[in-house]
Length: 319
Image 1 (cartoon, rainbow, N blue to C red):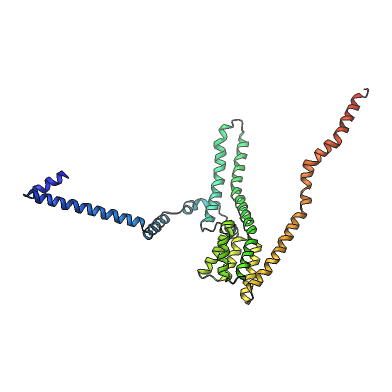
Image 2 (tube, rainbow, N blue to C red):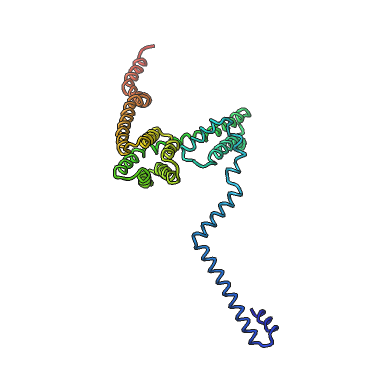
């Protein structure tokens, strides 16, 4: 600051004029700095600018390439050549809740990575087992590669069954709520949205699926197609039957409330029959635990003393 004041005094013969110019320059600098700080704070606090910045960052990241783009060359080695096989895996991924376009690529990339990395891991840990022969090492590497190739498929099947079990368990509650909403005077779209909102906490999977159906309807998709998409995403026969009933009801113009009430009663009867079927299987399923656990103890208690007495008798017999 002192150097600037001396420079100004060199340009102006009057020291007071130099000091006045110095004060004006200092005030202008402070004003510009304060204005810049205020504009920066306003930009940070403005939600519109923040959202635009996020979109710009997302676009820049997408231009750089997503994870699927990086692993696509790796997925090429595990992707089957048959279209029906890829369609089957893609359908399983949708049933498991993975609806991203890159899900299929990431799945096959993971499969290829596991198939290649597990045998390498076996060779890396082989120095810790010096007694292992070459044949055993090769067999362990092949077994690890086979395990790595089937592990993603096994995990995917487990994920599909787990999600379908959760959706199936929450379907009766959703059906009863839907019947109540329709009978109270709500339309189908409003009833689906209300049921989705109610199921968000207790049954999030089915609540999300119903929200997607309502979003598709609002976006302009026909109600019949949105309901068919719901059946395809879940893969459950119960929901497929409900969607077929709703499509038929809307096509012929009959009462949706009456159709849902009849379907709800039939679904309760179906659940009761399924419960009775499971109860009837208990007797057959209990045979194996009884044979494995109870019968050895029973024979030990019932026949054991007699066997011990026979042993004593044979010991006392003269040779």
